Amino acid sequence: MNPKALFQISYGLYVAASKFDKKMNGCIVNTVMQITDNPKQVAVAINKENLTCEIVQKSRMISLSVLSETAPFSLFEHFGFQSGRKTDKFINYPFALTGQDLPYLTSHTSAFIDCKVTNTIDLGTHLLFIATVNDCEIISGEKAMTYSFYHEFVKPQPAASSAKGWRCTVCGYIYEGEELPPDFICPWCKHGVEDFEKIM
Image (spheres, rainbow, N blue to C red):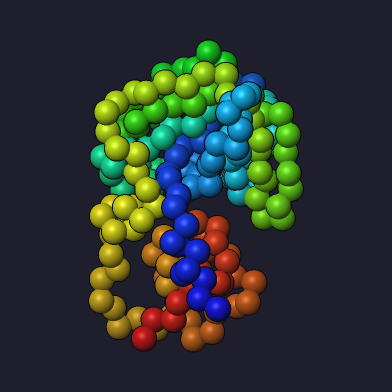
């Protein structure tokens, strides 16, 4: 089996955000889809280890910033490679608030979607939130970024290295060592061993 075949599924990239007890947080997600038109509903999958997931569970609200092709790698580092438990995710990034008082990014964003969670499905490592769309607007004329665009044009390509180990094909993290533990989880993007390749 070649798990890279799953990269052929078309994905976008988003900042999913929420707020509870004055704490705002957001994280990068790639699994968002519209599932019905009347009422307008979306499904959003978030890793259980993310603070954003905890906040959405409590608030039952979620906003989505649809990232555009202008989004720099630093935005993905800020919202995707560090925890909101240790930093304010919205510091130094321009944002506005939805009608539910949730943050969404106002730059490098083609649209925002403001949602109320109606159902949650436990998928093991992730929760799938089913949500009704309260509001949505186009922010810019910029094209929405796809996962393949991110991998081809935004994510830095790994430099040639003499290091031995394993490289995460999702975010580029390198695990140094001959053998990758079978239960290893990438500390950056939270993907498992199936997304690592041996460095030759």
